[in-house]
Image (cartoon, rainbow, N blue to C red):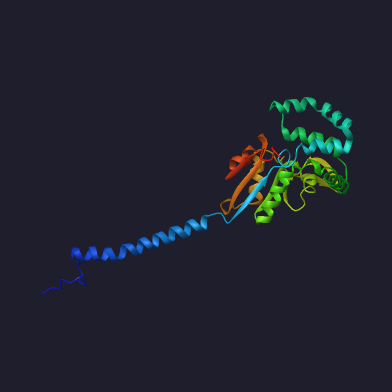
Length: 239
């Protein structure tokens, strides 16, 4: 007589249900474990805090302050009057922000040695620490003490931003230098608007590995703020 046991080639429906009862929990547990492992592996491993500089960490635009420091108030007024048409068109979005900024920078600093320029930048930072917002400086220190990463992404020239925050990664607009002389041109695009996101990803490309918190104060920061997991608009103005 043929074997009708569950071990036979053709299983009785009852045996099928019993076997499924034993196997399904095992596969269910494996699916839960695998899903949990995948979820954990995809979670950010650390937090990156990205700060704008002018207006967020400082109380004023440092390009104008640097020009005034270098050339005096009348020197600043003279250069602003010279480029007034371009500056007005820029405000109306009819002229490139980068082009206007580069023209002003070239007029004032083209031909200066890099060593001299850097010395002026360090002296400017040392003499203008009052431009820094105390609450912003405190926030940066707290982030550093927590072990998180801090980066400052600024449209300002990084040569004068870095002396203000020597222990922070600075991603600013970089200037072109040839034969140790400033050419008056920018080596990188003006770090403004979408360029801030591009510069962030160039330095920190593995976006899934970190949680991004951004701090900004102007239209030029909106792309970065929108790109972040958490954003703070003009967070230090009340202090």
